[in-house]
Length: 225
Image 1 (cartoon, one colour):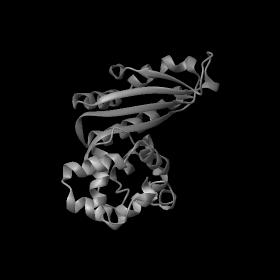
Image 2 (cartoon, one colour; image 1 turned 45 degrees about the horizontal axis):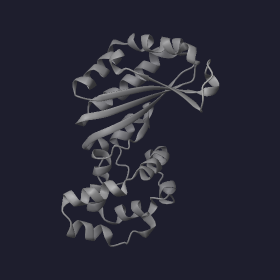
Image 3 (cartoon, one colour; image 1 turned 60 degrees about the vertical axis):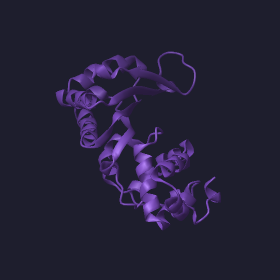
Image 4 (cartoon, one colour; image 1 turned 180 degrees about the vertical axis):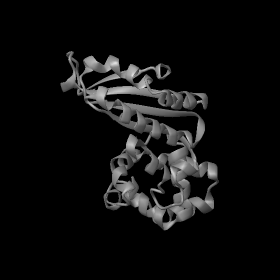
């Protein structure tokens, strides 16, 4: 789709269409495939490396945004404020992500109202010994989100990538709850109207029970935190 975009499309969209109609076009252009491409390129983008994304399926769209800043700024704003397909960030990169103008359009996530965000959090295998620094890093990531402007009904999705065995998963929530500041961060997000989904993601080769597929998922009620 993106290869067929004419170079003058950005100018025509800005001149001929209302912002409401432009937003419909922007949401269409930021389809699930485009958001997945950004997620794959995100670590490189945070380092300022654009080679991969310029060679990707959305390369023509990124170039069009670069050639027309008003169009690009509106596109990026729509990506953050209107899309339900979420961007995924490692818990250690939440702060840099929120502060970074990824596409050079003068729009960083912290400057707009986010609709949704995904945080991937790697749970250490020897979690009993590593939980203090782990909880601190997760709390810092949540504090970064708390400083943002959030849409009512903002959806925070946390995926805990489990490196231990499933038999230990019942110990996870009690260990998290030992941190009052972490519990406070979850509570303040809920108080601001955020919807929180937490999921444990376990590779099947680490499961102690026979399961189908590559991963075992267990959704954690956010009220547990």
